[in-house]
Length: 501
Image (cartoon, rainbow, N blue to C red):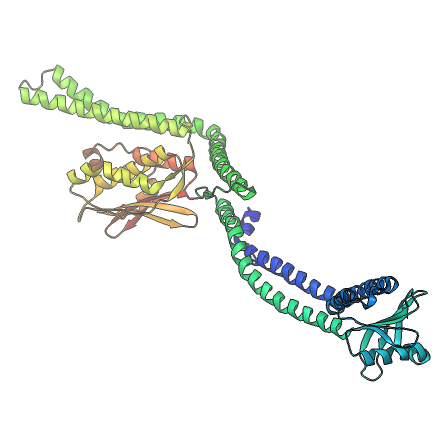
């Protein structure tokens, strides 16, 4: 029970929808940040490797053309310009007389000076360059210009035909391109994060709504409310879970009903053995006492008829009416005593089930409408929503019938009967009030005893046996629920309670 109470009061600290959105937005943001980091870390190196390959490919092209003699052709000139434009490379090829054979890209004079600087001023360049690759024909390196403080990748050496060459490509474009790419990725990443946040919020809402619905159903199940059902029909794991929860709800309701019935029967069996002897003695004593008067009346009037005390037809009819009336009262009393005997001896087991008490009371009052009109009583009963309780529906209807019949027979003054249903503390109280004389306080504790009558003359006038409230007591005790009567200045209220959970 403590665990159930904790579960009832336990609230979710975080919404699964918010958690779902945070996880996926974090994943998108993390992916974009990782891409930015990778770009910053590896994109310049990747660009540099591409430049190295471009220079080596350009060297192979120039070397092949110079060896075949095509280096001065217009076709090679067009091809060389394409290579220089595509990879942003400047190329200079000189013969042994330091005359330019082929030049493409930047200013030819500047390229010549740089080549001569490399050829004749190498000692001065060691601190300003970093060699990337070397062979018998060329040297590939990165050099920093001491005047402009800019870096460039350079390649120089000797072709197969003995001509010298010099190739150069500025690295500032690589650095700038990487920076631009990273900035663009950052901008598009921010937009992607915002767009994905909106999209993920709606997607997470669609995904988590069935989960939240299942959570609410399970919460109602912890309160033993098994009317909630999962109605969506998704063909996925959530749909399967919803179907299983519906089956679990039906199974739990059936099992709890069976357990309550079994528990009720067990409690009755324990009490039955202790009370059975005392009940037999009390029953015989009360029956003999209550039947003494009607039997005496029947015997007296029957003897009068046999002795012809009155010879006229009207007197004989009166004697017969008294005999039949007393016999009818004895018949009603015997039936009620049999009902009470079955209840008290446990021969009529209580079937605990869940039913709507407001519908039961309303239906009974509708069926008793003719009695209300015959007794000229004003009935007050409001419309109530469905209120589900645990109990034996047929026996609870008998309690309502006994209370209401009692109210009809004792309604006086304004002749008002008021029926109420009040919910409190996991219980519902059904009360039936009638205007009239209050019951003497000393009689209140004895109302539930068999054959006890507050006003014997009045009770006998409407045919009361004094057993109805004893039947109410037996039924309510078999349900282990409270019942009672309360006096007011203008009348009396009888009530009983049933569990709603």
